[in-house]
Amino acid sequence: MTEANLRYPIPLPAPVVPSAYPEDGLLETSALEKPVSVEVRVWEAAEPGYYFQLMLNGLPLGEIRVISENDQPGDIITVLLSETAFEHEGTYELGYKTTSPNTEVSDYSPTVTLRVDRTQPGATLLAPLIFPTATFSDQLTGLLPGYAGMQQGDVVQTLLNGSPGPTHTVTADELTLRPVEIGFTGEHLQPHAPGMVSIEYAVTDRAGNTSITSLPMLVSVQL
Image 1 (tube, one colour):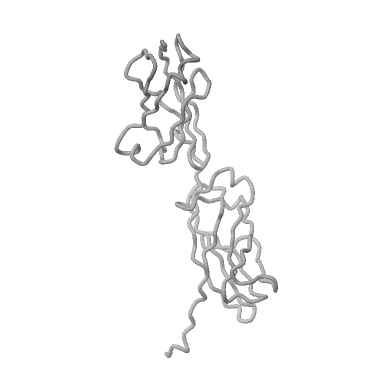
Image 2 (image 1 turned 45 degrees about the horizontal axis):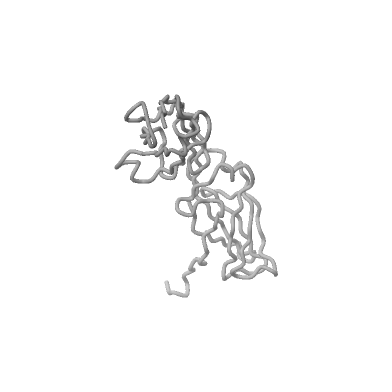
């Protein structure tokens, strides 16, 4: 077989999902409450009459988009993918299939990985923050116990007697190498002193899932 007999696939750019985190394809749950926008760049060999369709996990899905006279190579075409396509938690592979109307030969783009996470951090229980002593003056540090589903990028929002306190974003090191420490300054404590303060927290992950509120820790604050 000579080189002339071989058919090489058309180079196609991968689709882009603007609402997905570029580093790992995670989709925020709020973005899944409406159709998901997918951007497809018109490929170099595209001609009027060619058409494409999105492929999710290897299956065609959504509208068939025909290349028009106005669509030029490099242009971005936005198509919508129904939010019902991502009802289930897990990993999805998204690409698209192009077809020539003359030969009905199809080519397939590279895929991008999308992740759907609908699980709230901490499951059904978040332990209280841990403090080295029961009484504090102008500064205190709380140690956050590990919780189910703890991930880098989780945002911890503390509550002092129900009012928002300091926040903390979980780092990669805190998953394995060192405990999570949350500092409370005099500015946070002053409105609650002197007396007992109930300190709680809740966690919101990168997908936007929010945990239940933790068990409270009662501490005495004297400023």
